[in-house]
Amino acid sequence: MDIKLLSTLKVSRWAAKFLQHSIYTYLLMQSVLMRPVESINCSQPTPESLLKALREAAFTKTEVRPVITLKTPTKINLGFIMYAILDVDEKGQTLDTFLWLWFDWQVEGLSWDPVECGTDRITLPRKKLWRPDLVINEFMNENQTPDTYYLTLYNTGKAEDGLPFHVISSCNLDIYSFPFDIQNCTYTFSSYKHTKRDVQLFFSEPAEDTLRKSLFYMETKGEWELIDMVAGKPKNSTYFNFDGLDSWDELAYYIVLRRRPTLYVVNLLIPSYFMITVDLFSFLLPPQNVDRSAFKMTLILGYTVFLLLMNDLLPVTGNTIPIINVFFSLCLALMVASLLETILVTNILCGSSNYPPLPNWVKVLFLHYIARLICLGKKSSEENSATQMGNTDTTSSSSENKINKIRQQEKESESSLNLAEEELKELGIIHENLLTIRHHVDKHFSSDQNTKEWIHLGEVIDRFLFISYVIFLSVSFITIIIFWMYWYSFGRKTED
Image: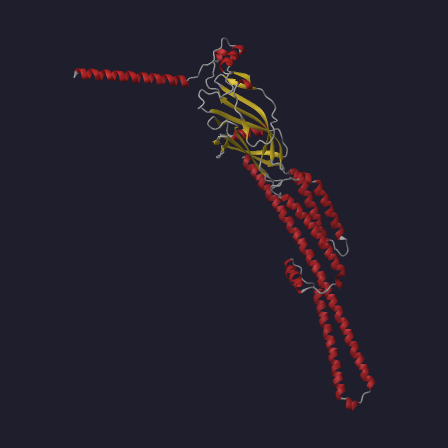
């Protein structure tokens, strides 16, 4: 029993010592990994001494990522400020901006004592340290960034770099609501070569702070203004690599821009409304007394010249047609239609007496339905004409009846009265003359009624186009007001 107990105690003591040794080893490794690595020792607190120490410790490792083990990804914090909006090219679908970009990363295993070395940071040439190969995926032009040569290294091993960035990026522009359009563009930052296993990107600050700083430092007050900015990581960041599909870590900034429409409202919309309103009131001119067609032709010529002069202000793109172009086309079409209508009405007023009678379908469509729709019924003079024609018919028919009665009486009393043959011939001549007079009267009243129907048709067409003009101006004005209110309310929401 004593021997077994003694052996058991020895095994327990050995296990306890092994466990204690393992715990000491683990704690030692943790303390080594967790505490700052004092990898640089300066002989004296001078820049020369620090540079000499850095040259030996860090400047010889610029070809690879600054990590202890290559399985550890380098974490990069990134941010920027939009300093200027230079141009938005609708035809090329590009956005031209100027950014202040900054990013920082950790150089693992590099640190120094700021007291011993005399400073907590130092500015070094970029080529002395490894730098991430960050790009904007939407970049569309050669790099026109001004050259900068230095970065900042802190005593904790943190490296901080920044540079101005002239960015010409692709942007899917929708100009349907021009000049009240709001555009959404994207900046996607990623490493060009390093995948997610090597480099991980993080936002250095919230998008709200980036927007606030950009609005504060924004120098350009041109056609476009920045109204909102949202940041996030894209869901799909898998692309084809030479070795197959691989994932890149990306940061996306969604930028909302708004166009200032005052220039286009003053130079395009208001003059168009003035000219179309003048053409509208030209309907008040009587076409039979004033040469209305010459006046309208002058307006069309002036409006065409105006559109040619203002053509440079209109956006050019094959993606979609702006609604303002449709508005200008409709204005020109209405002017041309009013000119053609004036020519038609003038021709009706001048030559309607030689026209054939109106077809029945024209009478029903224009003189009945459309005339009622535009509150333009038949005039009382036409009814009077019809009454006069009826009276004439009645008079003519009564005269014919009297002649027939006379003939009947002549036949009945021929044997008794023995009238002369000459008197009967005179009565026949009188009868023929009365028939001729009746024929001429009927023809006169018939042609007069046909002329009045043609004139009434011209008046209906004139009134119908006038009302169409008024409806078009009202609808277009309300549409522009709605677009402008939406543009203004969207900006107010983002500012709040």
